[in-house]
Length: 288
Image (cartoon, rainbow, N blue to C red):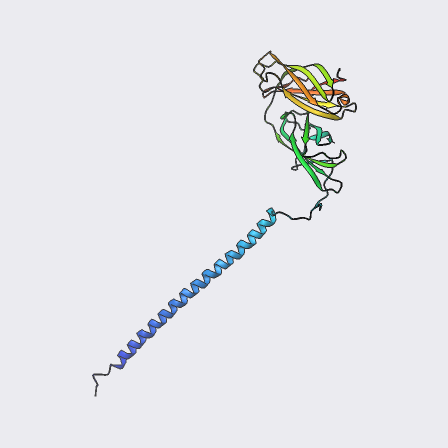
């Protein structure tokens, strides 16, 4: 006998099956969401760790270092010249420390002209700890092959003349070619108490104006060691074709009597000095 109030067993089976399937779907969805969240957290952790390692490796390249005061890290090559790269460097013929200034001269030993030659000095005390530093460009911005140019580097403080130092050079290869068109005439020279002066003229034998005409001098003692260097511009500093302009090299020096010869050079933006086989005009034993 069939009871109308009791649902058919198949209906109960169908209902239970749907309920069970629904619970399973809900459980699977929750499991999928939980798994995705765990995977996301794992990836974030991995990227964070990799970023930390990268930061540490990058910092190791550019990081600063801490040292104890007065500690010397390396033993520098004293009173030598170091090039900033593996390329050949211009030859420093001579250099000397005079209290708070390093003077010297550079030779262009390349087969091509060079420019923007900068000399950087690092001076050390008796314990090998760096005490002062400074830099300067050579007197001539543009130096042709076989020519030389003076430099003087002013330091922040006075140091003993026997202090050890290093010189580092940097330069650029010049693409400019300055034809020889400037003729130099050196006139009177005078020595006063703590001063020295040279007078002269520059003649432009080129077809165009000579702009920014610069005259530089290297002053030597009796052993041809550099005592001082100086430069100035002609007045006016623009010289027309077949025109001339005077110049005056004057500077203070502790012992002007030590100066026994002078090497003088002149150049403009367009022209270089007429040398006739010599680098520049050297006048020995200046007159009083």
